[in-house]
Length: 98
Image (cartoon, rainbow, N blue to C red; front, side, top):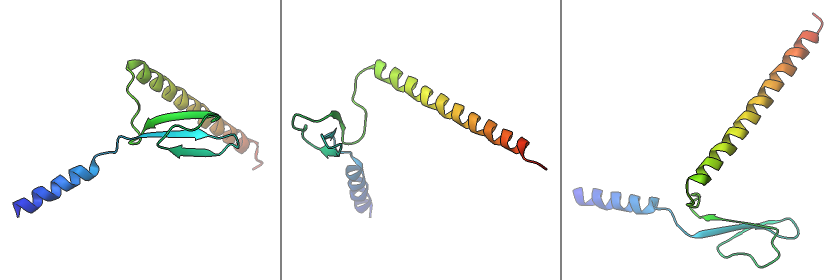
């Protein structure tokens, strides 16, 4: 019984291991997005590369600082838009005749 549990746990651990292949994403001249394991032929408008597991490429703390800055900017923009929408709704309710 214990042997079966060990085999099952080992199988689950191996199944959960991510594939560390390189994945490329690019946009062709017609604006279509493509994905592949090999870099595109010349002429792609924009090429992005990342690990298949979705993990960011290692690069140092500068990458993390930039990601944090980008996140904070998106968060501030979302908060601003939410606040603006609430003000607009409140103003519309005040204008309604009772």
